Image 1 (spheres, rainbow, N blue to C red):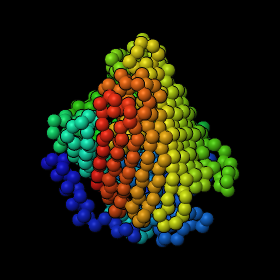
Image 2 (spheres, rainbow, N blue to C red):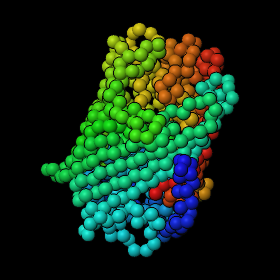
Image 3 (cartoon, rainbow, N blue to C red):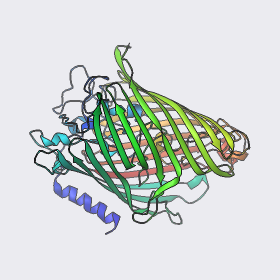
Length: 563
């Protein structure tokens, strides 16, 4: 059976199953429930705050006292720059709210939104191991979800040993004009992704989690799809985890292949836009109290093949370090209390086969950075600064990245307009010379932060953007963004999101890269099924035109089903 057949069969099974109607509620993963104040002694299961992006209505409809409603539909794929604020891409509509009966299996007192396990994607999490469905041990009365029986399968009389199953199917079209910004026939590529997962809990302190991914890519004649798009069967995740409480702190050890998002999402992300998510092989140690936490990790990348189970660890690329997070004291600003996190980190990344300019060699970099993010009433803030130092092919490395993002809910009316701005800087220079390399390494960042279609990437780039999101219907959101693009160094290239240079741009002078318009429409049909379309319009500036490059349009409709 082909992957497309599996997709169609899964959709048919969903239709026949009679998924809970819109009035029904979805039983929650513990990582997506109502939150208390930061630093509470016993953090609730969600930890995502009562903020501009988190205010929800009760399942019966009326708003909770003193709170303004948020109606943005839940999202599939990756969040845009505005939607990434506070690591919460979008908020579930009121009729899809989740029951709040957390029974945490792995006790972690730190607010869930800042635990480094990624944001929520509708009733589910981007990273599925972050979900805790143990509340179904004692299910709430009333109508549940058709997939509840798969979320808590008891394997012992006490219910302490149980299995949770998860899955995803996605159909997406990538259509691009002037591919590579070269004057050429438009390309269209169909992508089909199928993921199944299982989470086995044995008692309160041990779990094993695994995911398999089977994906296909077709269309785009003459284009050889990468293993990240076309892959018969890959072990996307497979790890064991033990958990305990030591001296009042939660301590966890996770060993194996796993997805990892413990850092600023614009530089560290699982990248769900391609068919195969980014995962890493190695060890992660978590330490957490109610007001501080740390993750120590040592990973190697995965060398993706195209066949089944031919995806070994890549010993030529290593990523290790420590990510921390601290709950900052709340202060009263403009009639609202702040809920802010400060996340300092140190990372080291080594790639034995990195190309910069005309040179291929070992790139060994240290990352020193911090992220300040959170909310103050209807305002959101996300600010990251990163210093990179190290060596590349015997040369010094000195690079900088600054990413500033803010948003504000303008009105609580029917459309709930939210305006956002972001300004970013990623240094460049030296890639085609012999001195210090100043090109910023953007290695696992979220693709649509700059471009839905991978048209531009944050190396040797500065941008200023303004965006607007509205919800014209309760389950439909529309987001638009306009960006002005420039390059800091006119002696370095303009880069794609993969880090590849646009050939010839290093040989022309000037700073004007162009203008980019982004747009997306998302329709959340029910808690499991969403449909949407994303588009980019890149208008080439002087630098691109003088290098013989052209305007380009990206168009990407998709349908996604998750349980």
